[in-house]
Length: 206
Image (tube, rainbow, N blue to C red; front, side):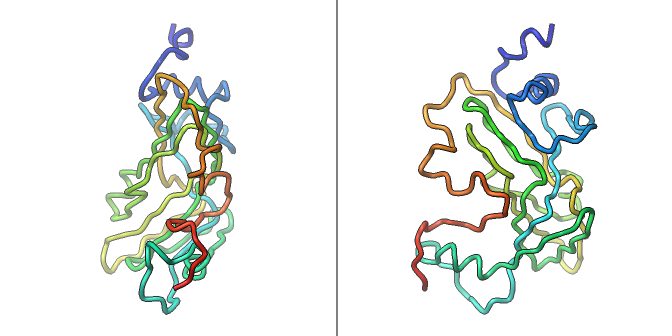
């Protein structure tokens, strides 16, 4: 019965509908672990920390100007870290990290993805993606997330490939006229790297 009406469900997708959409390739996730169904709870599916991270370094810059600082300058402020499979990363209370998930996500033109932090990490003081958690219809790429810790004086060890966030999915009443991949506001889709902010869209240096 459930399988017969899965295509008619609107709003946030429950577990059984989410599984059906993934199995049919409506929501595409790559790579998809062999035991992926075990990481589906009531309305979300776990995603895992990828091997590429960007961390703000001691670059000598005191100001980031949201109107004039170019993306190229922000890239100079951040160090690209590449982790091996299962390698630990030590997160301190001074770090702000941009990372990608191990999985690539592709959405159709009538489904929105929502990224959520993990409660188990939140209880350790790790804040995952507190803003900009919406992935629009037509998204195609490795989701980028931001995280840090507010646990003063403590270091948190996290690992490449470990669960870092969870996604829920919402089916719209109709497809959008213009998907994210064709939008002029598509600044971050399609990349395998954790892209820095492109808030200005300019190449002006301060």
